[in-house]
Length: 151
Image 1 (cartoon, rainbow, N blue to C red):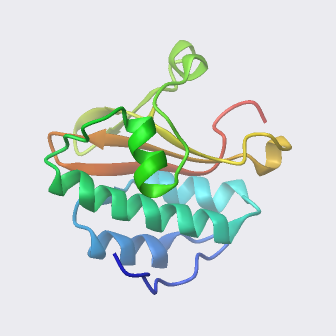
Image 2 (cartoon, rainbow, N blue to C red; image 1 turned 90 degrees about the vertical axis):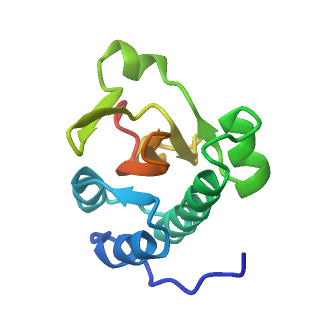
């Protein structure tokens, strides 16, 4: 895909970028939690997060095109195809019952997450937590900002 000319990501408002990405890919949703977390968290690397969200949207389009059958482990697919670092699990989140969210009347797993900057100070560890909804053939972004725990 050619480079997308998307709006800048406002440091406290996910709205413009999320709206544009959602209309580009009807298989990509942003939960209200994502907007709230972005506004609250003050993640310092706005351009890095913008690029990750654009790449995630492109991945969502391909996920739907493939009928949700990646042909490999999701962590590898995201790394090889999209240059994104994905973790499919998080034991701490599971133990603390932070591993799910509700959207459109259904409960979804928020365990898959993009990792932006792991080996740095806690106020710079970026995360995008999202569900890979095979039934709806879409990704549902639940959190954009800092890591959900450990700050």
